[in-house]
Amino acid sequence: MRLMKSDNKEKLQKGLIRRFIPYYRPHMKLFVTDIICAGLISAFNLIYPYITGEIIDNYVPNGLLNWLLISACALLVFYIIKAGLNYFLQYWGHIVGVRIQKTLRSQLFDHLEKMPLTFFDENKTGVIMSRLTNDLFEISELAHHGPEDVLLSVVTLIGAIAIMFTYDVWLALILLALVPMILIYTILMRKRFLTVYDEMRVVQGEINSDVESAVSGIRVARAYTAEEHEKVKFERGNDAFAKCKGKQYKVMGQYYSSMRFMLDFMNFAVIIIGGVFFFNGRIEAGVFSAFIMYVTTFSNPIWTLTTIYEQIQQGLTGFNRFCNIMDKPTEPEDENAIDCGRLKGDILFDNISFSYKNDDSAKKVISGFTCAISAGKTVALVGPSGGGKTTLCHLIPRFYEIDEGTISIDGTDIRKMTRKSLRTNIGIVQQDVFLFNGTIKENIAYGDFSAGDEQIIEAAKKANIHDYIMTLPDGYDTNVGERGVKLSGGQKQRISIARAFLKNPPILILDEATSALDNATEMMIQDSLNSLSEGRTTIVVAHRLSTIKNADEIIVITPGGIAERGTHEELMALNGIYKDLYNYQFKNI
Image (tube, rainbow, N blue to C red; front, side):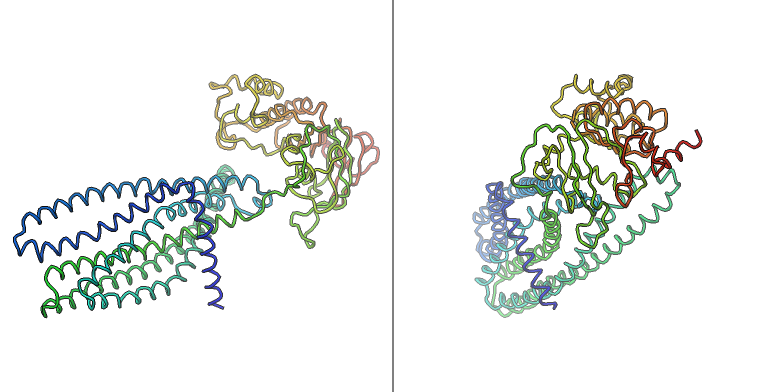
């Protein structure tokens, strides 16, 4: 079983490497230059011990001062060139990694923009943010340091071994006999590294998610004096992070301390055995000195290879998590889907059923729902929570896919329309208004990015927010803060309505658009909504029944389906659910 798991990980890592290599292609010239620089640095590292040996054994004993000075000047030139090469590696080598990271981030963000909403329902924002930041940084570091350090180390290793064999075969063989011990130890530690890094990624994503949630909900925590609760919750994740990090550093400590001992033991062995060879006249002093320096030259790349193993694991783990998201399917689109153009707004729900988990065992939120809404009419959906009113609104723009039945607009199944053209025809004003961190003008412009300032101002006037905006020091260029925190609920709602006016869609969805507002603000905004609804197919989800008395049709929806439908007067005459709800709301008036 363990062998199978090991084989699977080997295959996974090889597949990840093959998948990652194409990201170098757009930067191949720079990458190849970087690799050449690394190779030249390796060559220069091999020159110094050789020249030192020549100086000790040849130039100094024989009084060859000219050759000594020439060698010294040559070394100085090599060091200057090496400094330039190192600068190139540190700067342009990192630029290669940054550019690859930029490409990966763009691809990941673009893919996230196309993911179905079910993905965001099931994944925490902090975890997704961790993929976009921490994981991609680790991949960037691997993209730069991986090939460069591996090549530099391998060239130095091979060169040092070849030169040591020219000095003394037996001493070189004794040194090489210690290498398998290092390799075996590295292989044995590999599994522990993989396990602890996978654990670390999960815990880091969770703590990022907790922080994001705590910061976003800081006002709620303050309102309910729940700071201590949030702190306890955070510390729980923080403790898990510290324990996991401690486990990681324990494995690293065991690995690196053992590796450093083995490399130091190589130096020890060469000094003892090489010293014996020197006293027996087998090697000269210069060769002995050069050999000791080559051992250092030999052990440095081994150390580099062992330390880069950690980076390789982090980078591959990050890339694997990147691929996990990239391999998830985006919102499905019919290959023959058409651009529906501007729709009139005749909507038909034909025996539709829906559950949030797309399997037979999942509970149906909507079952066998049938309803027709004529173009230009206003239909209100009311009833107790859990009946699927908001879900129905989400199904029209295809935020979720229905399990059974058909939703059609103007006689065409919405699945036959491109999502972009469908959603262009739909405007949504919700209870929980989301404003992006930017200016008021930028937030209104979400309705139509091609709109000019005059159109934006006109939309704001229709939404009864223009006069307020003009009282602000920066007017339309006022920054609203994260999620519109600098504005009141009513102001945010009117900016949302201005967006819808600017979009000018034939179909409008008002999902509890005024339920979070006070009565005075609701009355002001209701006028804007009434104006917005004129001439459009409008679906209103409302708990405040006073706002939908003038709807062309009111549909009472319960978990069992449609219970009642008709105008306000017709439903009041039925003496049923609607009348009970209405009387309850107005019993104290």
